[in-house]
Image (cartoon, rainbow, N blue to C red; front, side):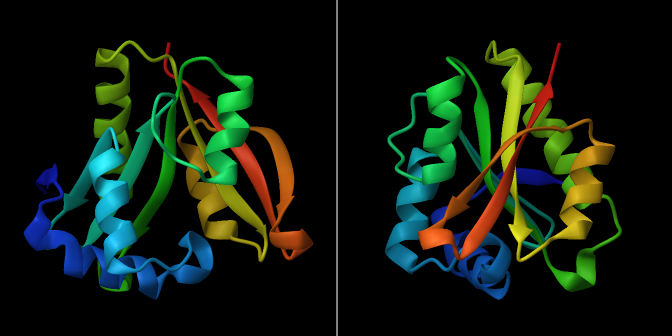
Amino acid sequence: MIVQPISRADEAAVLALNNANAEELSWLEPERLHELIERAVFARRAGSIDAFILAFDQDADYDSPNFLWFRERYSRFVYVDRIAVAPHARGRGMARQIYGELFEFALNAGHDIVTCEVNADPPNPASDAFHASLGFREAGDALLHGGTKAVRYFTRKLK
């Protein structure tokens, strides 16, 4: 499977995959997705856009409360803002391969930690298990959107 940068031509399919998983990722409009891709340090897709990832480093111009939580605590990191795999492509190792390429990218860029968040409410047990299998460990939690959404923050050391 080939993992490639997300191109402008890929954006409609990436948007559809993102919004099909909006409960876990948050809904995006086309303009906002384009902004995020432009600001991301790592924006990749796999297969025929069967999966994608957007990640930011600590210097990104990004206002996500989850990203800002990590920025307040770590001087240097790569933050996974969103990753999704289409239902028909799950179980084929795409997310694991994408993360592997992200880890290699982050190491080569001089980072020693990758961060992410996973929903606690509503729960996302599949994501919990997947991230644990990659070596992510819980680093904190937060209530967002007036207490209507709970997340847990995770880190994975690269060195």
